[in-house]
Length: 459
Image (cartoon, rainbow, N blue to C red):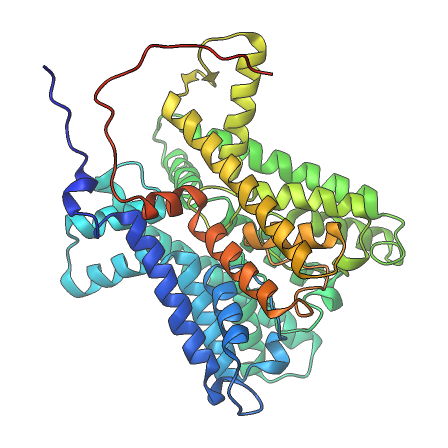
């Protein structure tokens, strides 16, 4: 009788499962962030901040969402804004990735438990690569944020009378927020005042695309580019990178075209802008639903059709193992491949010269259906709690689940129960439905036998 090997993760014990530790890490950071934001020093008025307001802001920052119940620029003090910025950075890199880096710096080595934790957070494919990936994630993040911050600060100095320190702070805040797909801004209108300024819009767009497409994709493309420059030949891109790049930029182009076309003559959005301004703003708003969360026009003034397009883009989200949320473009693409294979009557799913494992197909279906369930239940509950229309409520819930941060303007006016509901949705959206389900499971089950097969009628 063949003996079934026990997965390495199970040897860590029920409290050491990486998925559970990931959920616990994000939960602890949310609570700590909320307690700090409640302090009088965090608000401009010097008064204590309510628990729900502080918890909502902390969760939105750690989950790199961007939904707010109070304005970041006018309500929070410089100390409070710095706390929000720190929570965004920690949330973007991942609680467990940051913990792994700390372990490397202090102990100069990484144990098995720490490697497994970091592997769960960064989606590393091989355990031995975790150490290199953690270092690379942090290095790449800092380099991109510094470059984008420099461009934004220089633009700020050239167009305003602010001091050098204020311009640098402005650049750093928006660079970190953009790269981590957080959507927090230091203006009440987000980026509306910069809608037609390419020196502000383009760097922010590049930053959230690089952060949102996923660490593995950026690493692999960079490694291939360096190898070609040095005259060395590497194997072609992995299936994950091929699927992600194709789907991500395909949806990016589709979103840009659809939003620009639908809002071209809308007097509340693109209508008053010049031809170049319409193109820039339309392209930006076709990209920002990929969980970036910035807006350069009034989202509440968009056509219902445009809001529905945004709902779809926000739900799909960005690349795996990046700062974006949603069910991820790979999940969406895998479902499309499964459907195509079933329509053709093929017994297995083949994609770009590779066969998809059945476990991967089940994971994609699980992530997508759990995401639909979360959005559906939360939308019904929020409709029951408030008197807002369906399109606005659905948009808000999908934005929270996809950790996007775009809003039609109803967030602040929701009741306290609505804020608590969105907190839960943001948390689930950041941690991931399948990770949360794994963390709540008491143990992993091994099927020791199979039952007779029977085919029920489908459809």
